Image 1 (cartoon, rainbow, N blue to C red):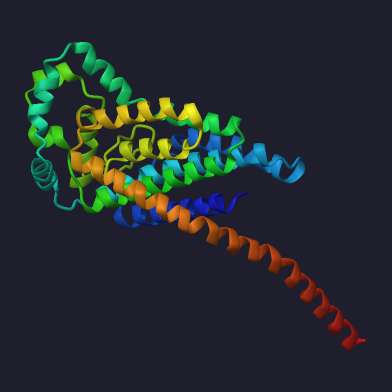
Image 2 (cartoon, helix red, strand yellow; image 1 turned 90 degrees about the vertical axis):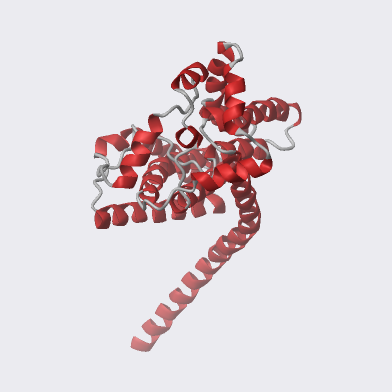
Length: 326
């Protein structure tokens, strides 16, 4: 198990503790155990294969991806619950500030979607499908890295996903926003023609968790309630980053994910400020991982060296005590 995966497991465990303690202290009801079934099944499968190919049939090319995917599926429920708990803080919305920043950049969100609504209807339909294709892109990138034996790059991908997911949830709780569609409130006819990927469905959960009417935290029926910074943007940039130096394989990944980022303001109800915020969070996460990874490697290497030395010293001490008693 790589140092990054060990770090991820520690972070996930910390998030799980925060979720449990916070929900109990604040009077929230955690999802029923059956709601965790999907995550538990995937975690059990990857943990079983990871253990087999770590201990009994050592094969890093198989064990590495198994532990990476184990941490990915372990993070999902912990991250989702954390995002809702952060939103429950109910701090003042910053939509007007985000809209003002967009205006300062010269971007007129409402005028832009009015222009988009005049395009053929298939444009909006395919735009929404593109926006919602992030999960498919992640699967394909993870599969590519696994088949090419790029275990370290896969660890990097999962670590960046966990870090940006946690960071965007935390920032969105401290600087909450309802989103551009809620703020600008365009005519429903325009909204219906565009058929944005995110729609209005997330707002029911967003307002319910903020005003306290939602007391049972959702899991399988959860919504993406993070507006600022944009997690969609973060994920797309991570996918481009981890596919660096892969030759021609990088080209479709760049085109696909830049397309997702381009649809984010309209299909994701985001401001341009959200996209820039997501980019900054990603840059910070990349810098942090590049700083952290060698230090983790030295730390765990030191533990591996000290453990046998400590065991030898302990054995010698027991021998000395035995001779003294004799």
